[in-house]
Image (cartoon, rainbow, N blue to C red; front, side):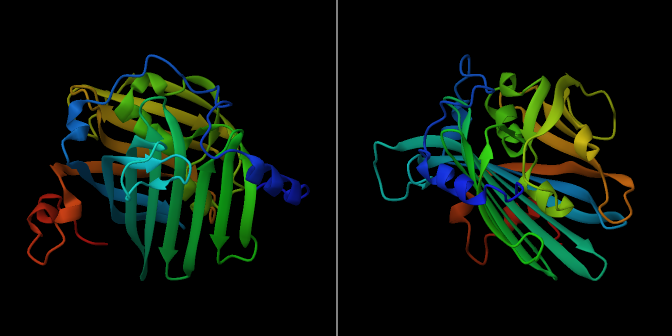
Length: 307
């Protein structure tokens, strides 16, 4: 959502860019990336459920979050799942689906984000986000190009409206969760340009553009989020007065994400509050085949309440 002075030029530039190249993403490491643990290729997905305290309006609201990590075939030219069989443009990607549901007084929110990252080179091809509440809904999508991302936004707000533009290359906040699972050495430390998470740009109603940030990794020693050998990845974004901390368990090769904290000022009263997600349960299961009326046992294991 950049200032629309050279709007037409940006659209043309994005359309001329090749959608499956990562040549200019020099800010990402391009070597020493570990192969995914074999557990990711056993025909199951990792599903984690979290208790959520979500910063919105003038307070913290109860809710729940779900993160689903799974590998699947992905077409790099069309940037969609390969569901038609073999293709020379098909690669195995790690997909992260994040679902956040919470209530705000009488009405509720549902926010869904999907991020598709190639474990072989750490490149993220696509992120899509949809947000629904009782006021309306919005949709946002990023598609990889040679020089960054083609950005699409559909919103019910007049000030945002319908947008199609090009966003300069930078690390995506949404891909950081995949980086932790693939190889934590991918996590950027020190000064870095970050494109804030899609759901954050929607909730804060900020222009979608890269901002200066500082990343760091440290041991997590607080007792509020349980775990064994915990580390946290902290991302400080002073331009929007925001700090993100993702807490993960290093006792296993898959580095499970056990929670996160997200501090930022409310767009309503400007008071800084902290969204906190704490993991309740984790299961590995082929959920896509568990769609019958009686397939509720695993859902009960996840302690989902259905906000």
